[in-house]
Amino acid sequence: MKIAVVGAGAMGSLFGGLLAERGHEVALIDVHAAHLEAIQSKGLRLHTDQGDRHIHNLTACLPAQAQEQPDLVLVFTKTLHTGAALTGVAHLFGPETHVLSLQNGLGNVEVIQTHVAAERILIGVTTWPADLVGPGHVHSHGQGMIRLMSADGQTSPMVARTVQALDDAGLACAADAEVWAAIWEKVAFNAALNSICAVSQCTVDQLGQGDGQALAFAVVDEALAVAQAEGIHADVEACKAKVASAIAHHRGHKPSMLQDVLAGRPTEIEAINGAIVAHAQDHSIPVPCTRTLLQLVRLVQARGAASPPAA
Ligand code: NAD
Image (cartoon, rainbow, N blue to C red; front, side, top):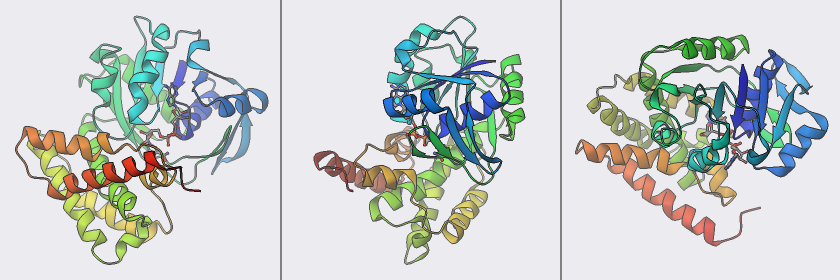
């Protein structure tokens, strides 16, 4: 397949690198100049459980420099940059181009739909982890998976082709008709752990002290009550078990939202807690913990934007 990864940071580089290793024609498209230059001069350095290597059979460029019309656009910006990123590569979209989003949060389909028709959007969720440790250099350790489906709920040859490509690349991918349940469970998990850590500056394991876990469970209850009101069969107990396991085992882990706050960067709070609150309003469901955490993260973010990033 010809694959353009739009937003080739930690996750985009990991996925693009693994797909290139399986022989797909991959273009990494990003606005991070130092990252692009490092890949252009030395290849993409990928350190996974399969080893530490440089991948050379891919290209890396700015959006305006990309020429090749891809079969698949894999969008992996942070959610707040999706619209701008797709506008930057609008010249690449042909009548058969599909777009896949495995980004966190809700609202991704709605943004992508302003660029391509719903039947050409694939949506899903992934639990693979990745970190950009420096320009051109990505780490990913541990196990993950991908679940995806066409945004219009129909199976299609492109769903099967994409699942096959990602699975062959070692990314444990399956098509899943219940993908919205998996997406909402991840949103609930992130709404709980990301926002509480961002506000309290606790690492995930530190939520095991005091009322951290009880607050996290309250957010999961609120978020998944909204999902159920929308007819999505999200599993509350399974989600709470994942939250409890993360608190018990993820020692010293700073979720991305805490890392963003510490670096003075905007966070994905609007696509996570913000989206839950918006959906809750549609169903008149009270979500006081989720809403309060949304308001607190907005405050912390506004303060961060007004002061230089923390060292
Ligand atoms: P990241 O910040 O490492 O990468 C995002 C990239 O998008 C950056 O390289 C940035 O330069 C690029 N970008 C921003 N604006 C752009 C534009 N206009 N055009 C092209 N590129 C642009 O983020 P990440 O950690 O890879 O996360 C990406 C998404 O995946 C997020 O939604 C995140 O929540 C989700 N996710 C991340 C992980 C993880 O472990 N990192 C795991 C699961 C899901």
